[in-house]
Amino acid sequence: MEKVVVIQRISCLLLILLLVASALPVLAADHGETAYTQARRQYLRLLQSEAKQKHRDNWERVIHAFEQVAHDYPRHRREVDALYMAGRCWEGLYENSHNAADARRAIAAYDRLVERYPDSRLADDGLFFGGELARQLADFPGAYLRFTRVVEDYPKGDMLARARNGLELLDRVPAAAAAAPAVGMNAAPSAAHPSNPAPAPAAATGEGRLEGIRFWSNPNYTRVVLDLDHKVHYHSQVLGSGSDAATTRRLFIDLEATDPAPEVGPSLDVKDGLLSRIRTGRSADGTTRVVLDLTSLGDFTVFELSKPQRIVIDVRGEEPGAAAPAAPTGGDTIGGLLKKAPAEAPLPSVANRKHRGPLCIVVDAGHGGKDPGAIGPDGVLEKNVTLAMAKELARELPKMVPCKVILTRDHDIFIPLEERTALANKARADLFISLHANASPSHAAYGTETFFLNLAKNDRAAELAARENGTSLEDVGALEAILFDLMAHAKINESSRLASDIQRHLVSSLSNHYSHVRNLGVKQGPFYVLLGATMPSVLVESAFISHPREEKRLNSSRFRSRSAAAIAAGVKAYVDSMKLLVQR
Ligand SMILES: [Zn+2]
Image 1 (tube, rainbow, N blue to C red):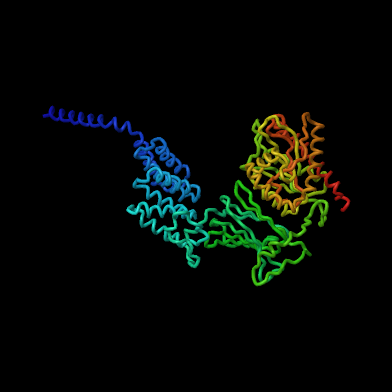
Image 2: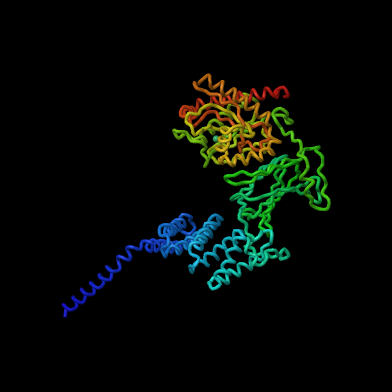
């Protein structure tokens, strides 16, 4: 009996072995299936943990796995599944990140599926989900296109009812937001229903996001910065108040296709000098309007900076005795106030100061915190050099001229460039000096140069401005286009004189102590940190941190204190030449 059982067991085992052996060649050959199964398993694990779903890298790992299957096994039966799953995962990531770029990646994955496998059972799913995401991103033509294809090309598919419903929702989007549908989509119901007052809330969701609002004011000036998650179209207008037009003004900025972040409340009482209140509202067409209530409004400048994207609004108050603005007739008028000539704005400068007392000089240590600035071949960081030199300069300046010194930063902290100028304007500073260390891709470049704000005269100045601004050369090109508007209040002549005095003293003083001191001269360039400064302002590049010899110098306290003393001597020469001391 026992023998029989053993034999039976052996034959059972043999049978299993045979089955496994016959199956093995097939399994071993199907790497595509294995890779897909593994990616799918990762996906299911991610779905089981809400905590894991909060982390971008977890999603990206799974997405990569699916995309790898599609890439490595084209025309494998799992390619279509992998493309579909990649789309689902990008979508899952988007639901957590709310980052429009993730939604666009999902749409791209679905589109690829439809393009490669139009006859697949997943094609209409890809079209519908892609259309739904396009609708959420306010890409209404894109949504129409996809929903219409589901209805026309896949009438027997399981997405038909949902696509029809999507088209109905789109029909309620205001015409202006929906834009002209592409050719061939006129079968879709007309998008023009201006009388319909109730767009579906989700349909008007903008693509941009107003992340925050920052501001700095004094009674005559305010700078407001709108932080955005990416570039948006905007326009600005002024409105007179109906009741008290002579003293109250409103300026608004409309941000197209933009939602305010939840942290940005509808109204903020500021009561800080010129700026009394900031209000934010979103219209049905997806535009976010930011209204600045001002105690007076002389003129204003709006410009945008990139990386990160932000819109800067500089408002100057009305000068006492300036002509009263045209009174609004019958509520809000726009054109007259908008065309009003900019007020002559003789803001305090060293040469023409209305208030007495010591000068106020803002010393700006370049970079800081997460922004190290340029890094030398031996690892010396520009942000540390500039901070040490700024502290030294703050000690030296009062020895040379009666003055109060304000440091934009006195420790290792990140401060956006536009905030530095805003602080100087708010403090009504008489001079603004930004300290930096130069850098060049060529380790042979060395020397000393001082800049003031203007269009770049040559490519190297433009390159340096791009580096100091943390942007690209293209951004500098775009900046030069708006610079013209900003120059009206910039003290260009005074800035160039201040730059010359500082540069001359720096070079002559350093030459007394060091060999190979090279005078690169006074230059001009479009530096963010100098934009909108209402006082003479310069940017000093005392040496090249990218040059080994000059990196060593910048890293020595002796060189830094000598440089600071020379800059202070330059400031004194400038102040003397402006005959300031005679006025006191
Ligand atoms: Zn710098």
